[in-house]
Structure formats: structure tokens, C-alpha cells
Length: 377
Ligand SMILES: Nc1ncnc2c1ncn2[C@@H]1O[C@H](COP(=O)(O)OP(=O)(O)OP(=O)(O)O)[C@@H](O)[C@H]1O
Image (cartoon, rainbow, N blue to C red; front, side, top):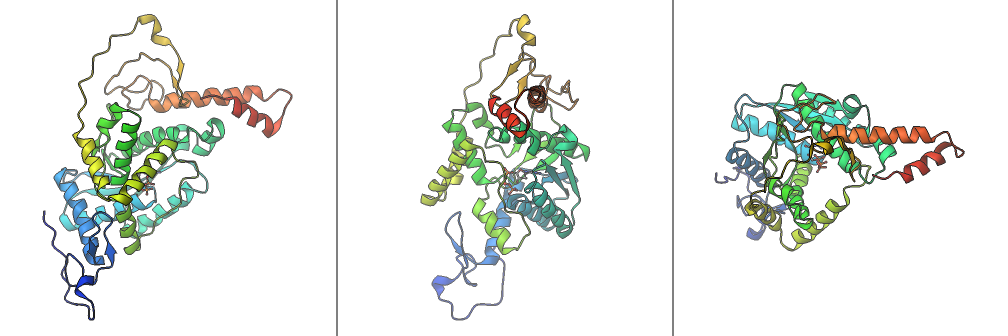
């Protein structure tokens, strides 16, 4: 689809030709596009940004008429812009989808409570229904409690696994089979780089997919911002004066992702197109077909293994069963016990360990701190 600059009859006076928008050649350029350094006006920026997202949606057939779609709404810039643009494009191009905001309350005081207040305002501003699902109601733990028990080091692992499942469960509760998230081109390029740097070929193959669906889950995920640059999303939110929450999560970001992010930013500074180039390189990589593994001996079937991320693998040879239900929580899982329940089992064991140890000579917070320091995950 070719780009048509929005028409405007007013031409600015006293503006040199070199200062005019490179797309419409009639208004003054205000923005240097981070994606290609083109100097354009505000109206052309809005139009080109929205049109690229529309083209991504159409060329990947992301939506079907009559489909109910949940926007994973965190209150941050990406998902706020996503909710706004999706509503606008749905009306402009008649996608015929029903949009709902779906928020997960991880239970992080001073962070998620404030960002959820933003989503509640967005609900009114965009006139979209909102559903909030909390870790407390699903898992009986909040992220603050998890960090107090397991430390901050693995917090992203817990949060990632629980949030993925919570979004699925929230969508299922609403009868929705499609969740869109605000993951953007920078996030995707960063993930490709990270997987290359740590040789994680299994994840590398999936990291550039615009649509993903876990085995056993009825809910698919998609990323309409696959080709949208982080800097352009921020510019769009700024010029459209959108109401979003901009504080970073209280708990440290995943260390290695932080390193990959830094590397990406440095590369982008030298060559802005490298974000798209890395995504395209990731798409071209094809893996060799996997070898089929032999079945393990029967006596090893009930072994319990505590993994480095704190989860407990209750039955390491449980097999991969599609459309199966988790034996613990009953939610759909491709394994006998879902990943969230494995992590919960590890947390329960450590909570029990802390409670058992509280009788001895050292008392109070110091005792708890020592116990926490001794725990290994
Ligand atoms: N608590 C949440 N509730 C609902 N969806 C979420 C939540 N946290 C993250 N998401 C979804 O996952 C996407 C990626 O989240 P992540 O925290 O990795 O990135 P982000 O760049 O900070 O996103 P955002 O700016 O939207 O907060 C978000 O854009 C959003 O769609």
C-alpha cells in the first residue's frame, strides 16, 4: 500500500524549501523520523506511523471480522499507543473487531498500582471495556511477596511465566482467543540478539514470529508493533498527548536483556536501520530439523528436580501432551504440571523452609534475612 500524505490547504509562510516536510512538501518539517532520518511534519508522521501498522496488520492477516481482541494493557507507552492506534485503525479501515483492555495486576506496590490507575483512565478516554486479573487471585502470591521469598534475581522469570498464563486466563475468562501486546521492533531485535549471544537456537526460531501460540493454549498472541520503533512510539504518544505511565518496574530488569538492549541502542545510533535488519536476519535463519529423543527409563519418572530459576520439576519425564490440563491448577498446559505450578511449588517449599527455621536463637527480621540469604534457587 503506498503512502498518501494527508492534505492540508494552509502553506506556511517564510519557510525555506529545505525546511519543508519531505513527504507532503507543504508543511514545515518538525520531526526527524528515527527509522530513516526523514524530516517530516507532525501530520505526515501520524499518518505514516499509523499506515505502517495498518500494513503490518493487513499483510499478516492479524484479524478476522467479528473477532474479539484483548489488548494487553500495562499502562506503559507501548500498550497505551497500541490501544489508541488499534481503536483508530479499526474505525478507519473497518476491521470489525471488538477491542477489550486486559490488565494483569502483578502486585507491585508503587509501580503496578499506579500504572493500573492510568489504564483505568484510558478505559474512559478510549471508551473500551477493561478487565483486570491479579496474581493474588490466580496464584495467591503477589510479586512483592515472591521477591521477599525468592529474591530479586529471578523476579523476571516468575513474573514472565505468571503474566503469560494470567493473560491467557484473563482472555479465556472473557471468551477471547486473541491477545495483542505492545512488543515493538526494538524488543524483537533485542530478543534476536540475546538468543544469538547465548546460543539459544530453540528460542531464536520463534523470536521473530508476529503471531505465537503455546501448545495446548486456545489463546494466540500477536504483535502489531513488530516493525514499529520504540522511539517513534514515544514520539507518537508525545505529540498525540496520550496519557501513559512511564516509570520502570521496581525490580531490576533481566540482566542479560539489559546488556542486549544497550548493544542494540549503540548499534541503532550508528545505523538506525539495524533494528529492522536484525529482525529480518532472524526471520531468515532456519534451524536443522531436530533429532528425536529416546524415551527415558520408567524408574526415573517420579524424580523431583529443582531448577536454577527456582521452579520444581515434579516429573521430569512427564512428556509433552497437547491439549492437556495441568494436574495442579486444571488450566490448559502442554505438560502434566504447568510451568506456573512448578514455580509455585518452589515458592511454597521455600516459604515452608522459612517458617520452619523461625524457632531458633536469632529472631525477627535478621533471622529471616539470613534464611533468605542461604536459599539457593
Ligand atoms: N501487567 C500487564 N498487563 C497486561 N499486559 C501487559 C502487562 N505487562 C506487560 N504487558 C504486555 O506486554 C507488552 C510488553 O511488556 P513489557 O513490560 O515487556 O514492555 P514495555 O515496553 O514496558 O511495554 P509497555 O510500554 O506497554 O508497558 C506490553 O506492551 C503489554 O502489551
